Every structure is written in C-alpha cells, then in structure tokens.
Length: 236
Image 1 (spheres, rainbow, N blue to C red):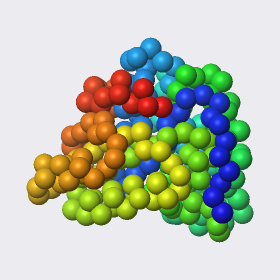
Image 2: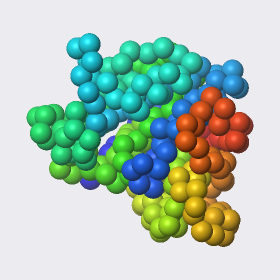
Image 3: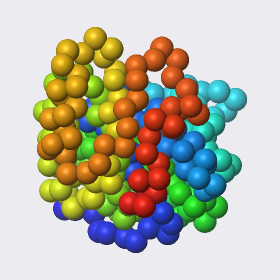
Image 4: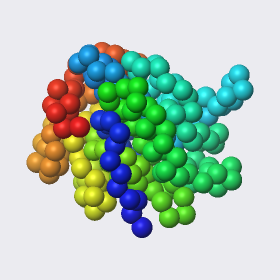
C-alpha cells in the first residue's frame, strides 16, 4: 500500500538515483552548496544509511558525514540520519538483522525538525528508488510521505538509458513529481555519451539540471556551479 501523502513542513527535495553508486551523495552535496549560494539555509538528510563504522561511541557513515559538511545549517546527527546500519547491504536486510523497523513516520518527524531550522532540506535516498525498506515498504515512500519532489541522478554508463527511463516510469506510478535530473559521468570512457544525453533529454519529462564531469576527487563546493540551481529553486 502506498504511503499516505503528508505536506512538507518546509521546502525540500529528494535525491534519488538510477542505481546505487551513481553519485547521489555528490549531487546532494552540490545542491546544498548551490542553495547556500542563493542565500538559503540548506541542510542535508540521509534517512537511511547502510555501511557504517563505530567511532567514539557513534556510528559513522561517509555519506552522512559529507552531507553534514556540505550543509550551511548545523543539525543533530539523529535527525540528519535516523537509521544507520553497520553492514553495507540492502536496508531491509540490515534492518531485519538489527531488529529494527524502518518507519516513514519516524523519518517525517526528523524531517520536520530539520525543516524548522532550514529553508531547504535536501534528502538523499538509499540505493535506487524501489529498494526495499521493509517487508512491504520501499524508498519511494519517503518523498511521498514528506510531500517533496524528486531530483534524479543518472549515472552515465552503459545501460543508463534503461535504468533512467524505468526509474522515471516508477516515479510516475508512485505519484511522485520529478523536479529535474542530473547526469553524472561515472564512466569517463562511455561511448556515445552525447547521443545518450540527447535521448534522455527527449524522453525524460523534466529539465536537465546539469552534467557533473568525471573526477578522481570531486569538489561539490565547486561542482554546484555546473547545476542550474535557480531553475530547481523555482520547482521545489
């Protein structure tokens, strides 16, 4: 059953990926820097993270750390990352092993806390849009519950057309609004990149917000200039 729609307490955007490892965190951090450059208080959120190590009595996840570093507003770790699991596996598997139930009501409560201290909340998903969170729930229920639109990160590599278009169809089927998409060149040797981009422009019914180039050590505090933050700001 689809999650009940709930109005967002403040403006926000959900960063989804066509797959795992396509650059969601990089894109989310670039968006945070971009919103801050517009003079907006921006905070990142990673509701569910899998793959963490114990440091100083708390779980540390690299994606969460990057989001906190890119935020222009300080917020408590428990709200930025309500669910954190040690093994880097599918979240429903990690949650089951930990004896935890991932609840969108809990995520929404923490989102509301972040929304009270920020103008924009950038929420990063986990895995792909339909990755399971529990026996009957999946990641698409998070933006639906929060009432926020989606920015889709498309990892440019062989197979990206199918992954991207399937995800766009899934967004529509689940009643989610696509505010725009970001192309991330994760394979620097991808053949026919421009033709693939042209195909995606023609078939995705939302604006291309920008292309992130391949880089060994990407800097989201610089890469945001490659994104049309103004266009996104009018759509969230």
